[in-house]
Length: 117
View (spheres, rainbow, N blue to C red):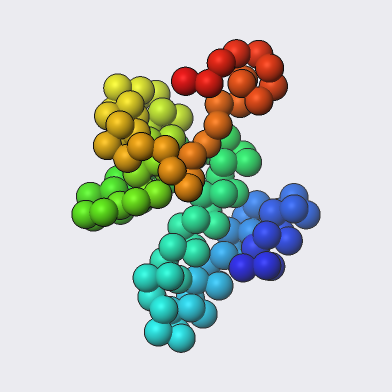
């Protein structure tokens, strides 16, 4: 996972995603398939957020969101829906999974240009 973070910091988003996928595969080989899937997806999501490309993960997140007790995935799914312009669905997904550990603050509020919603 560190190599994925390092590649992202070094400005290599494709390399970062590849390193996260490698970490996910290693975890799966060690018998931690669910954790590996999370690492791969969370890593890819983190990289795509920095590129304003969260909507690219919409199909993947939609599948995961259908799993009962989606937890933090619901928040990520809502963000991807909003990024894809599907705001009504994003609001419904966000309402179904209130902000928690993965809450993403409103950028305008952080910059002092607006209020958080």
